[in-house]
Structure formats: structure tokens, C-alpha cells
Amino acid sequence: MKKGEKKTEKKTGKKKKSIVREALSWIFYFVLLCCAAYLMVNYVGERTEVRGDSMYPALNDGDQLIVDLISYRFTDPKRFDIVVFPFQYQEDTYYIKRIIGLPGETVQIADGVIYINGEALEDPYGNEEIRNPGLASAEITLGDQEYFVLGDNRNNSTDSREPSVGNITRDQILGKAILRIWPFESIGLLG
Image 1 (cartoon, helix red, strand yellow):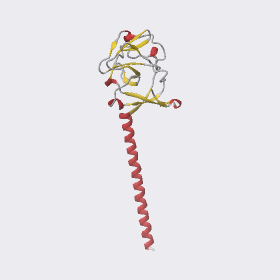
Image 2: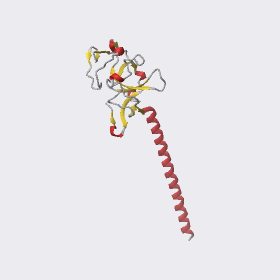
Image 3: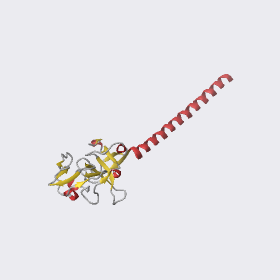
């Protein structure tokens, strides 16, 4: 009978080691997942919420977005990208606008039409004729790292036409809005 008791003790010891090993494995994977989530949120993508209607109809007040924080470290922003940048006169305030003018180009708005280097821009995103050209009533030449941005709701947007925003520089751009995650029925990539 003592032999059977020893076998039971060995099996119980193995079970305890197996449970401890399993628990440590779960803890390790949980910590790894938390670290990966932290890196994703702080260095790769960030969730943000749209406030206001300046990007209507592409984006609506209350939309939840994921902003890609890393791709502009490897590639240049392109025309029509939706970008996020800080508003220089109010702390913790960020604007989300569409890139219209690229470095080295000239931008002008005349008779409600956007002109890039003297040619009318085929703009599939502006939802109406521009009534106020603001600073762009005269030709604006963008510097080496400067971008001209507009909201899609052209007549209800504070953007590069306004002196408080003006042209934005590449180092001001925090990232590119790439994905809408809320509301549920509108989930999808942004164009």
C-alpha cells in the first residue's frame, strides 16, 4: 500500500507543477498582450473622436477613428489624405483635415474653385462651392515641408484659409486617419 501512496504523491506533485506552469504561461501571455497594446496605442495607432462637422460628409460628429502614427515616418503625405495635427493656439486641441496642397505647389481659390499650380483641382471631396477663399484668395506658394489643408465641409471649416491655422508643416502632422471604428454601421477604411 505504501507503494500506491508514493505514486499518488508523485502524481499530485506533477499536477501542481503543471498548474503552476500553466498559470505562469497565462500571466506571461497577458503581460505580453498588455505591452503590445501599449505599443500599438502609443506608437502605431491611436483612437480619436471627431468633434464638429468640418469634415462632413466623409466624417461626422462623434465618429471614432484610428489614426496611423507611424506610416509618415516612412512615406510622404499625399493629396487627399486625412490628417490630424494640433491647433497651435489651444492646448490639447487637434484638427482633422484633408491635404489639398503639397510642398512646392501654389494654391489659390477663385470663384469657388481650388487651383493647384494654376490648374483647377478635380476635388471629389468638397461638398459645395467655396464661398470664402480666405488667405487663398491670393496665390499661396507652399514651402518645402508645408501642406495646405481643407475640411470637406468647405463653408463650415477652420482650415489653411484661416490665419489661425495657415499652412501646416510636416512635423506638425501627427498621423493619418485610416479607419472608422464607430458608429458600427459605418466601420471601414477612410479614403
